Structure formats: C-alpha cells, structure tokens
Amino acid sequence: ISKVIIFVIVATTLLCLVTPCINATMIRHGGDDLKTFVEIVNGHGYPCEQHYATTEDGYILGLFRIPYGRSGPSNQTRQPVLLQHGLLDSSITWIINEPSESLAYILADAGYDVWMGNNRGNTYSTNHTTIPVTDKRFWEFSFDHMGWYDLPTTVNYVRLATSYNSMPYIGHSEGTIQAFIGYMHNESLAEWAPLFLALGPVGNVTHISNNGLRLLADLRADDLLALFGEERFLPTPEKLRTTFVDFCIACDECCATVIEFLCGPHRGAFNDSRMPVVSGHEPAGTSVQNIRHWAQDVRSKQFQMFDYGPLGNYDHYKQLKPPVYDVSKFPSSVKVALFSGGLDELADPVDVADLVAQLPQQSVIDWQKIPDYAHLDYVWALDAHEIIYPVLIQLIQQSF
Ligand SMILES: *[C@@H]1O[C@H](CO)[C@@H](O)[C@H](O)[C@H]1NC(C)=O
Ligand SMILES: *[C@@H]1O[C@H](CO)[C@@H](O)[C@H](O)[C@H]1NC(C)=O
Ligand SMILES: *[C@@H]1O[C@H](CO)[C@@H](O)[C@H](O)[C@H]1NC(C)=O
Ligand SMILES: *[C@@H]1O[C@H](CO)[C@@H](O)[C@H](O)[C@H]1NC(C)=O
Ligand SMILES: *[C@@H]1O[C@H](CO)[C@@H](O)[C@H](O)[C@H]1NC(C)=O
Ligand SMILES: *[C@@H]1O[C@H](CO)[C@@H](O)[C@H](O)[C@H]1NC(C)=O
Figure 1: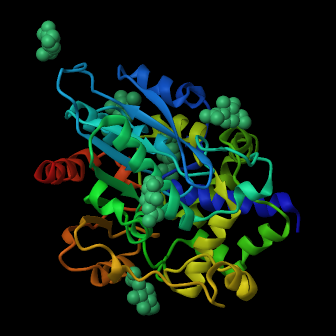
Figure 2: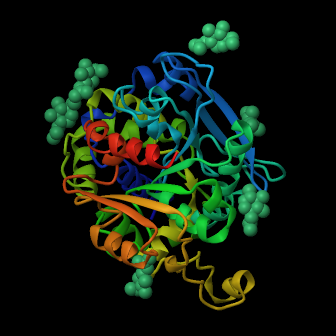
Figure 3: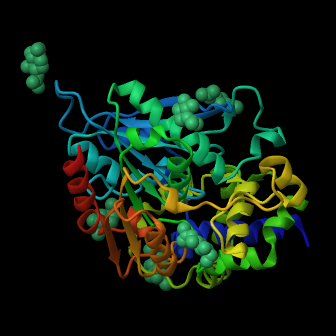
C-alpha cells in the first residue's frame, strides 16, 4: 500500500472529525484562507496580540489574545478567560464565524480579556528551545503532555501577563481531556482555573461512533503510519491544500462520497461562506503519537496514558501496562459545567454520562444536553451563540 494513499485516507478521516458539517463543494480557496489569525481578527475591527509561552519540557506555545472588544479599551482591567481548542484544531476555531456568532469576539465584547491557547505541534506551536521541528524527538508527545505541561504553562502565562490570579477555562474536545488530566496532575490549576466549562467533554472514548476514527482504530492505521516512520501528523494547511483540497477540487463526486461515508450526511449547521477560513487553517496538525493515543483508547476502552508497549511502559511508568486515569480523583474544588450533544460522534452521550458519574459530585455544577449537536457544533454552529454562549457567560458571571 502506498504511503500517500494511507495518508490521504487518514487525512480525510480526521478532517472529517474536525469538520463534521462540510460538503465537497464547500472546499475551495478564497478570501480569508490566506489571511493570518491576527489579520482575520483585525479585519473584524478587534485588536489581537500573539504571545509565546515555554513549557517545562521546552515547547514554545503560541497564544493569541483579544484584549478588548469593539467598544475599545476601558480604564478598568478585564478578567481574562482562557479558551482551548480540540484535536487537530487550533485557536482559529474560536474565530471561524462572524463576530456576532464566534465565542472569542462575543466574550471580548462582553468585557473579558480573551486568551486562546495552542497545543504543542499545531500550526502556532511548532518550536522548541533545543529540539528542531524536523527532529523526530519533537513529535514524541500525545494529549498526556498537553495535560501535564501545555495547560498549566498556558494558564500560568496568562496569570502572570494579566496580574489576575485566576480565570475561567473553556475547553473543547481535546481541550477537555487535557484538562481532566491537567487538573489531576497539577494541584495549582484548581486555584488558577477554578471554573471549567467543558464543550464536548471527553474521557473514555469507548462508544465513539465516528466511522473514521473507528476505522482508523480497527485497521490500526495509526500503527501503519508509525511503521512508515511518520512522526508529524497532517503537517501544515499549506501542504494539505496540495493534497486533500486539490483532490476535492479535481473530483467533487469522489470527495463527496468519501466525506459522506466518513462524516455522515451534511447537516448544514455551518455557514458555507466560512469554508475558506476552514480549508485555509484546518486541520492544524499534531503528532502521529497523539493520533495513536486516541486510537489506543478506542481499542482499550479505557481513559489511560499512552501505551508504549510492555518494555516502553516499564521505562516510562515502571509498570507493564499504561496507568489508567481515575477521574474520581479530579479536584472537588473545581466547578465543572459540561455541554454534550446527542449527535456527537466523539464525545458520545453514553461516555459523557459515564464521565459525569465518575467525577466528584460536588464538582459538577451543570450538565446541558443539546439533542441535535455534533462534535463541532458547540464552537461552529450558527445557533451556538443563542444556545450555548449566554449560558457560558452566565456561569462565568456567577463565579468571577
Ligand atoms: C454543499 O454545499 C453547496 C455550496 O454551499 C450547496 O449548494 C449544496 O447544496 C451542498 N450539498 C449538500 C448535499 O448539502
Ligand atoms: C480613563 O482615565 C483617564 C485619566 O484618568 C480619563 O481621562 C479618561 O476619561 C478615562 N476613560 C474612560 C473611558 O473612563
Ligand atoms: C518558530 O520557528 C519558525 C521557523 O522554524 C520561525 O519562523 C518562528 O519565528 C519561530 N517562532 C518562535 C516564537 O520561536
Ligand atoms: C504546575 O504548573 C506550573 C506552571 O507550569 C509549574 O510551575 C509547576 O511546577 C506545576 N506543578 C506540578 C506539581 O507539576
Ligand atoms: C452566512 O454568511 C453570509 C456571508 O457572510 C451572510 O450574509 C449570512 O447572513 C450568513 N448566514 C447566517 C445564518 O449567519
Ligand atoms: C472508563 O471505562 C472503564 C471501563 O469500563 C471504567 O472502569 C472507568 O470508570 C471509565 N472512566 C470514565 C472516566 O468514564
């Protein structure tokens, strides 16, 4: 089997997972796809800053900040809020839609100082203090490390940059799994981010129903990729344009068939006019090890650390099997509000119910179920600003 074919199948699968509502004719170039993050935000009349935070293990993470909204700066300091993206995604996810529909702009206009993190290995976080990005050691990470290092580093950076000791944390998908891990690993987080708003929350992925990721797990495509010596998964959007996007432009029909099979029918919750932003910036890249970790958890039906195989596990964990994360150890002082969707193929309703049952009961302050929401709808759907964001702002106002 050719490396390229596997790569395209896997790329399609994952593109699908992050964009469940795309259809083939929507994939094209034009307008915002060539603009940078800062240019898009500035283009809507908002200020935007780029910052860099260095983790304890040397990764340089890019952060974006919208310090105030369209009404301009005020003399009062503003409460920071941290937003963290999902798998194969980046901070672009929070600004995909129009300002009246995107969470980052809405929070800025509501008076908050909005910070958006980026996990190691995505478009905005591909530097390290000592290891070059071309070195395979750079890519030896998975969502474990995003919980252990990236999250505490990002929260701490925002604290120090703003002189606010604590902030609400809003995570989507992988941004929630890394938070469950992070809060259990680093005690300071409970004090620094005492409110955790979880969109499409993920712990166990036992009941995952996304055809793509299931197929990937069953075929062990993740292991195949590793065998081929690939470390970096879906490199840059630029590179993706020349493969997947061009494939779709060249053959609408085949592209549509592949997308329908992997993603299910197009639901239309997403405004097609924003597709150029998506095809220009998504997916945002990660490591093959991270994809393997997701596929491993689908197979093992456990929320556990990366499985290096018996010898590797002994090396890393001093035991032959990877340690399992026990979310009943989640700090009970942190308030968690969860938002889950009836059509979510990644954060499956059954798995979310398991997760809620395991968390300390005094932690869970709210759990909202939106029957017709799929995995990206919390962030991208055209009615999220009516259904979800007012609730988020209300929960933030109750605690800050
Ligand atoms: C796909 O998107 C195009 C362009 O926005 C639209 O005209 C078409 O109806 C959509 N197809 C499906 C199957 O939804
Ligand atoms: C901010 O403070 C300055 C000086 O104290 C004052 O001149 C200005 O009117 C204030 N602006 C607002 C928006 O309150
Ligand atoms: C990261 O690396 C790229 C190229 O490798 C470089 O252009 C960029 O300036 C670097 N950014 C930081 C913050 O080190
Ligand atoms: C928690 O995170 C902070 C900021 O990255 C770090 O300084 C501290 O050492 C971490 N604590 C633990 C126990 O890992
Ligand atoms: C979709 O985008 C177009 C172009 O920006 C805009 O005119 C239209 O109002 C949008 N539709 C919705 C429902 O937001
Ligand atoms: C994950 O599934 C395992 C096995 O069914 C169960 O023991 C564990 O409690 C679950 N964890 C969560 C967070 O749901």
